[in-house]
Image (cartoon, rainbow, N blue to C red):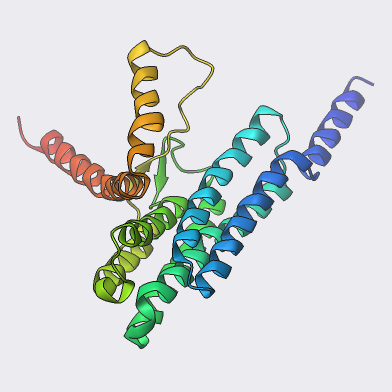
Length: 255
């Protein structure tokens, strides 16, 4: 008799995790639509709209998981749906946008670079889903797909902001596309920020710096600030790996 209520609770929890919840999946659907909209706008030659849509998809992708955790509506369906939406918004969409904007006139080199980015995003998402319970929660393994997509979208947006055509910087776009794709499937560590607890009190200087960043620095020149921000984040993995190697050498060196 004592074990029957526990088994019922376990069964209910399993059914709950496999359920479909409306609120977080609405955010995921909105992120998916933003990625689809980016592709459509790229086909119509409106690349600035495409770049902004990818950034919007990135924000919505960050919200759906937090909404699910805050409302206790996490589910297996939501995790799988989020991964499929990420593949469209941060895999297919950036690859097609950068191809239409700059790589289209490069022949095979152009579409090969775009495909390498796209397949790298798929591999990165598959690896993340299989290693989610194994790796250190503080760090991502490889560049996250939203950050890679933001790097591509930021390049397009900042160049358009300075009236630079994609054909004029095709080799730069080609290099950054390959860099973003290969970095996604690397083993470089990237800070995840998952250990940040929004419910804990923080120093006043932290609130001030965040307010200056989000309400002063980004609005001052969004394309440049966002591109530089995600470029630095993409390079941070290489810096962190180098720092770890140097630290390991110092620890292994004879005293």
